[in-house]
Length: 301
Length: 229
Image (cartoon, rainbow over all chains, first blue to last red; front, side, top):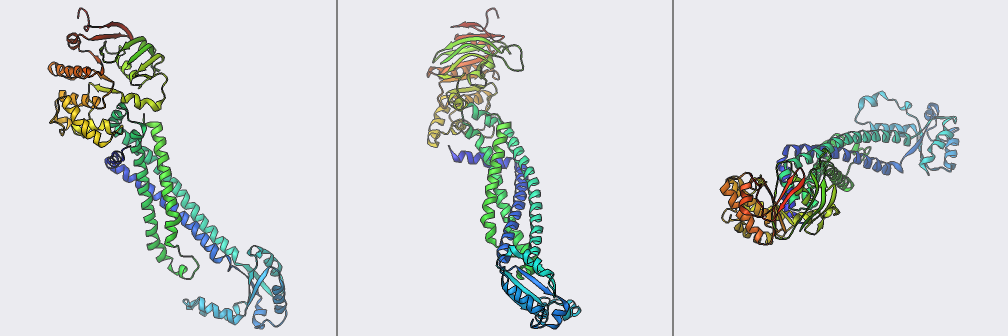
C-alpha cells in the first residue's frame, strides 16, 4: 500500500469538490458541536451533584410567633422540636439560625439590591433549623415528620429544588441532542452525496484502476478517507467552537452565578477530556460507516 | 492461456444470448483476431475474460484462473495478468505520459524505485522516449494509443486484450500500432484483438475467430477478414 498515493488522491478529491467539502465539514461540525454541548451539560450536572450532594440541607422554618419571640430556642415548642431533631436517627447535624441571624444573612446575600432590603422587614424572616442528613434520600421522611408539628411553618428539602434545576438542564441537553441528531442526518446525507459525486468525477481513474487490477483498498480507500478527513476537520472545528463559546459566552454571561458557586464553572479540561475524544471518535466512526455503505450501495467495484 | 468450454452469456435484460455455446482455445504467445459485426458478442467475450461479467453457462479459464469459480478477492490478481487497450485510449488528461503509465503501477502498489526504472523502458519500447512529460492532449491519436499500450504492457502481463485499438486512427497510424502489437506479441505475450478493420486482418494473416450472433462461425489459423468482401 502506497500511502503517499492514497493521500494525494484524498487531497485532490477534497479540493475538486471544495463547495461540497465545506458544506460537509460545516454540517458535521455543527452536529458534533451540539453533541459536545449536550455532553458538557451532562458533565455540569455531574459536577453539581458532586458539589451540592453533601451540602444539601433540609430547612425547618418556624412559625412567625415562635420566630419573633424565642431568640435562643429556650421555650416550647422550639426547644422540643430541637430536642427531637437532635435525637432523630436520620439527622447528622442541626444548626439553629434565629431571626436576627437570618436577617443578617439576608442583608449579605442581597447587598446588591437595596430596594429589596428596604422592603423586607426583619419579622418576615423565619427562624430556621438547618439540618444536615445522614442520608439525603431520607429527606421526605423528615419533611413528613416535622411539617405538622406545632410551631413549624413548613419544612423544605433543597434537594427537590436542585432536582428541578437538573430537570431543566436535562431538558436543555435533550433538546440539544435532538437538534444534533437532525444535523447529523443532514451531515450523513451530505457525506454520502459527496462520495457519490467524488466517485463520479473520478470514474475514469477508478475504471482504469479496476482494469489494471487495483484492489478495493486502492480504488475505494481514497473516497472513504475523504469522508473521514472531512469528519475529522468537522470534529476539530466543533471542539474549537466549544472552547470559543465557553470562553466568550459562558464565562462572561454566566460569570455571576459561577462566581456565587450556583453554577459550576465548566473547566477547559472537560472539553479536552472526555468530550473531545468522544467527538473525534463519533466523527470517524460515522463518516467511515457512511462512506463504506455508500461505496457498497452506489459505487461499482 | 484462454480456454472457453461451451460458454454462454445471457444478459438479464435480453432474451437472446450475447454468447451462445462458445468453445475456443488460445495458447500462450498466440496473436488472435476476434472479428464480427457490432452486436456479435465481441465485447461480451472480452468482458468475460476480464471477469467484468460471469458466464451464464460453461467453463472459462484465463491465465490459469478459473473465472467461473474464482472469488471476488482474486479478481485484481487476474486483471494484473491482463493488459487492456481500447479504441478511445482512456488516458488521464491531467497526467503526463509518464504519469499515465506510472499510474497503472502505483495503484497496484509497486514500489517507487521499480516505477522509476520500468516506465522509461516501456516508453522506449513503444517509441515515445522523449515525450514522457507531454500531456495527452499534446499528442496525436497514434501517440496516445502508444501511451495506452505502454500502460497496458508496463506490468508485463501474460496477455494483451485490444478492443478496436485502431478504430480511431488513420490507416498509416493503424499500421504502426499493429507493428507495435506484433512486437509485443514477439516477447511472448498473447495478443487478442477485437476489430472491424479488414485490411489489417487481411494483411497480418494471423488466426481469426469470427463471431456472429454470439456463435463462433469461423476459426482459421491464418485467416482473412471475410471471403468475398
